[in-house]
Image 1 (tube, rainbow, N blue to C red):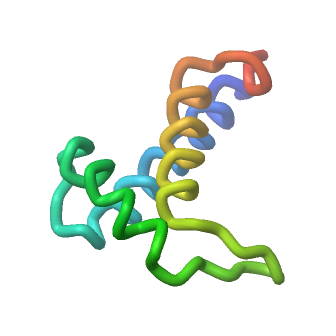
Image 2: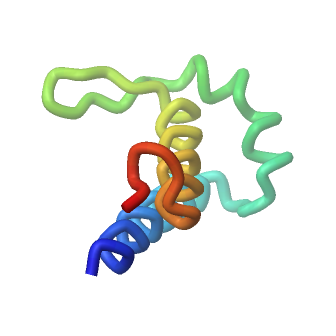
Length: 77
């Protein structure tokens, strides 16, 4: 049961990062990360009085997805 829950956390991370990447009309990581200069000047995302840069959110959720799908440190059972 724990493995299924950890795998769902990884799925959420991957799905949400792909959703954020989809707003750039490309799923190619090279295109998205080459736009990092544009992303750093864009308005930040505010959530619960915290301010996040969009490229940071993409990287965080890709990292969460990689950790969750491979059940590495922090999410291992």
